[in-house]
Length: 296
Image 1 (cartoon, rainbow, N blue to C red):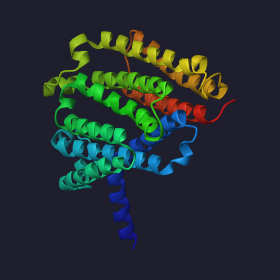
Image 2 (tube, rainbow, N blue to C red):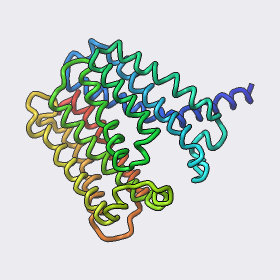
Image 3 (cartoon, one colour):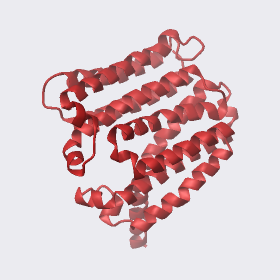
Image 4 (cartoon, one colour):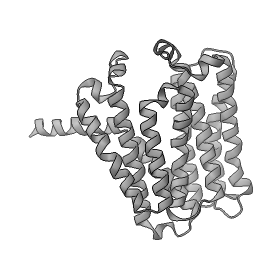
């Protein structure tokens, strides 16, 4: 019995890691934020929100599974023991089957939302496949795709229950810009490996110093945009909402800190910076969610 439970637990852990289910949960929150902002009656449409979440979840699970399947040999060379295929916890064919099953299911679920969401899901899904096969080898194009996947859930959630609200567009822009900065940071970390693989990235064209300055500018732009809802969006819960302000200022503090660190001429622990920026994005996500529901 204990061996059976251990086997099941090991395989569940491998499935979680392969499909990056933690990313799926973040997508769900972003979809909910988009819905909350766009419709005061969003809770009257639970079925649409549920199918919107399943669409995003299954498509991202499919994309990550295909990614690990295609990158298996590279991951082995890089000793990526955090990947279940490298450890042998799952077989490559398992990842391919998971991807092939979840992709059409994700598209099918979007049909139950509305036609616009179906089109977004189809385009996003095909972009994910294109990224896995080709786009990630052209880093600056791949960066734009990753930033897109961070921004589109807000818009998807908004359109799942209502028309697109201008506040959602701004939040999507913030997510896009901050994510683009994070991806450029990762490019700096990967520059030696990318050069060996013949992959072109922005730091290889501009150098580390100029790339750091661009990252700083992107983060500061995201900070400035994050203040707009509090100051100007009078028909939203964010307007003069001190709960939102407190939470978003904490988030902004993180990105201002990172901007300053990137500008300063010193040794940069980019792995730590990426973890800090991820924490900042999570905090911002909850600032958008709580600020869109509660007002103080």
